[in-house]
Every structure is written in C-alpha cells, then in structure tokens.
Image: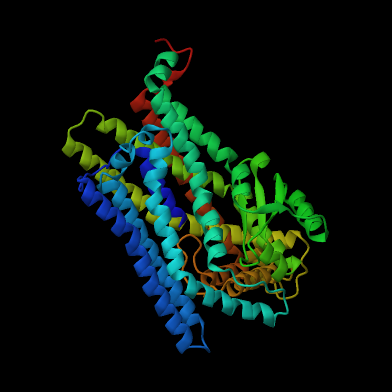
Length: 497
C-alpha cells in the first residue's frame, strides 16, 4: 500500500485541481469517488473468497491458497491505485474539497478531505480480505506450534485494521501531511515571503527545504506511529551492539517493534545516525534464534552501509526536479500544451517508479543479502563445509577466490535458511513475487549461487556500483537543468539583484 499512498498524496501535494479534467460536475464527481472507494473492496472480497476456497480444497498444500491470495492482492492494489489516482487526476475532487464552506481554505484541511476516500477504500479492502488473511495466518501459527514456540491469539478485525492502518498508511501519511501543512502555509503567505526574500522562487525553495527536513526527522516521528520500545538489556542486545561497532555503523537505538507477535520482520529507518533506528519485531524475537536475528540485522545493516536509503532519496529527488521543470514549462502555456506536458510527465514518472524503482529496489535487496552473509562471517559463525573462502581445496576454486569476492558457504546457507524461515513463519509462498524484494526462492537461489562463485559476487558488486553511479549522474544532470532553467543561483544572498 505504500506506493499507492505516496502516489495519491503526491498528487494532492502537487496540484490544487485535476491535471486532466475529465469529470467536472459535482454530482458526477461524487459518484466517481463512491465507485472508486467501493470497487477495490469488491475485488478484494472476490480474491479473498477464491483464496479461502483453494485453502479448503487443498488442505495438504496450503501454498496454493497462499499464492492465490498473494497474486490476487496484486490485482487489488492495482485497481485501488488506478481508481484513487483517477479520482485525483481526472475529476474535480480536489476543487470540491477546497470549496467546502468555512474549512475548505484552512491549511491542511483540503488535503485531509481529499485523502479521505483513499483511507476509507483501504480500510474496506482490508475488511474484505480479513477472513482469507486470518486463514493464512492460522496456517503459519501451526508452524509456530510445531516448533514449540510461543503463539499468540490471532488478531480480531479491529486490531488487524488498526495495525495495518498504522504501519501501511500512517507510516506514509503523517510525514506527507507535515509537508502538505508546510505547503499550505507557504502558499498562504506566498506574497509576503517573496517580498521578504526579494526572489520569486523563495517559496518553492522553502517548500523543498521543509520536505528535506521532514525526511530527516521522520524516523523520530514514525517510531511513535508504530508501537516500539528499546530492546531490553541482555545477551542479544549486547551481540547486536557489538556487531554494530564491528561494522562501524551507528544508530540512535535498536527497537522492539510490537506487532502482537503476528509479524516476523525487521527494518531500518533514517539516513543520518542521530535519526536512525533499527527495528526488530516481537514475533521475530519470539520465533527465531539469535543467529537468525543477526542474519536479518546484517541484511538491514547492509541497507545502511551500502547507502541504499540515500540513493532512494536521490531517486525521489529526480522526480521532484522533473515535476518542477514540467510545472515551469507549463506556466503560461495553453490548455493543450499543459495537458500534453502533464501526460508525458505522468507517463515518465509511471515508468520510473513502476519499473525502474522496483528493479533498483530488488537489486539493492540482493546486495543487502550479500552484506547479511558477510555480517554472519564477521559475527564469528564457524565454517563447516567446502568453502572457496575458508577451504579452497580445488585449485580453480582457490584462483577464483583470489580474483573474486568470496563468501563463506556456511554463512550463505544459514542466511538462506533464515530467508526461508521468515517466509514460512509469515505464511508467504517462497515463489510469491514481490515488486520491491523479489521472491524468497529467487533470493535464496541467488545467494547460494554467489557463495559458490566468487567471481560472480565481484561482478554483481561492480554492476551495482555502476547503477549507483548512474543514479548520481541522473541527479546531477536533472538538478543542473533545474538550476539553469529556474536561475536558482540568484537566490544566493551575495548574488547581485
């Protein structure tokens, strides 16, 4: 849901009215909004019913139903995204929200009203899919019982909705609403700000600065949106802190992420160390041993040490520059030119986020997987098998290890087993595709293949370095064009008027 929420809120942030006005009459707009709110829930109900039928018909192979639910939710999210983006981009819904008597011109209120159908639609989707999701989680709980691990009661509907709302909507909504509030205030005092700064672009630069500040401090806010607390003192905390020092990686705190024991996951938030948090769910702490937790911790540490969060922000900055350039080009243009530029920009951003971002994210996940293997090696995991790093008995293998970037086979196997265990405990089919992460099966196959081919590891790292260089080059190029087009150097206080 993250991408859908980001897309919708980006439209609310960027436009006061529809970029392409197809539906203008208030009655028709409201009808479209209602249809866009209810349609995804109907599709979700059908997907849930089909998944339940498959689970009932194939009790010996629940993966069939799990896979159907996973694939069906992709369809649901697609319908939800197209419907909500269509409401904001093709109808006068944004205009109607600003026309609400008395409160329509208050800062932040129009944006909240505009986002309300999206939030309602998401809640309805989760309500419709809840029975199937509960059935899949019940199957996962059987695995937990078989492992003689603690088992908590399944979420009732209310807790299920609240958890998903906090972790998949408010996680994005709260920072975006802060940026939206800043935008509304800047627009309200736009004339005064320009007069005070003596430059017509000062409000735009102030908005960009505000967005950057929110991005930096957002982790401190989001740890409150999610239910978290510091990881208590003990052997595991000592091991993770010691490992962080070995990795030369600083963070503000290591947190327990409370999910009612229902989620086996970990995450890292924050670009700068004073605002960086590592989160490990209570379910992971309950269900997995310390070595497995170290493997997951190493994966998340890889995102930090390989600067993935920074490159995601740079990737997003490219979009901001493109939108700014498109807006400047459209200033004073006729309607046809405006619609053509908006359409081309939207198509470009769709390709960028729909295809390139997913590919980039999956590549970064595999690089973080490699770092997770190296973290296990650094943590002192003993090697127990034929390994090109520790036991290169084959001369060809020894030569490849010297020329390449070898991994410990045992560490790779433990990391692969950790991935498989996470999928099993979460009720995720190993071959289920993920737009951002790839399937668990493909990640396991990749890490085991690389462990036996040091030259392939080195080639992968070189290729990823070139990808990062390409992102940097794109940021510099698009940023330079933006600076030149808008003459941003004139904002410097010492530049002559």
